[in-house]
Image 1 (tube, rainbow, N blue to C red):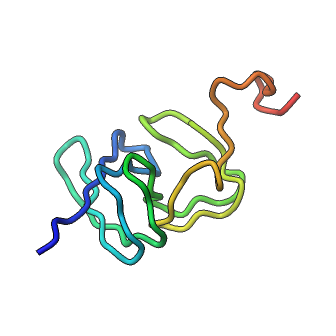
Image 2: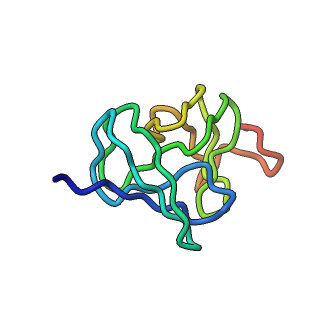
Length: 105
C-alpha cells in the first residue's frame, strides 16, 4: 500500500499548498491546514517535492497567496490540483521592475 502524499496549507488565505513529497498526476494529495483539518486534492500533473499545488481556481492576473502573502500573479488560468510554479506565475517578490502601485516599470 502506497502512502498518500501530503501537503500543507500554511494560512487560511493561501490558494496553494506545499507538497511534502513528489506527486504523480491523477493521485490524491492530502492537504493539511494549521488547525489540523484536512482535505484532498486530485493532482492534474506531476509535481516535484516542495513545489506548490493549487487549492482553488486562480484566474490569469489573480494573485497567488502563500503564508497569507501575495507571492505572484497568475500568468494563465490555473486549475485546482495543478502545479503552480514559474511556468504559470510571475513572481512579484525581490523584483526591481515593479512600482509600489504594482505595475511594471
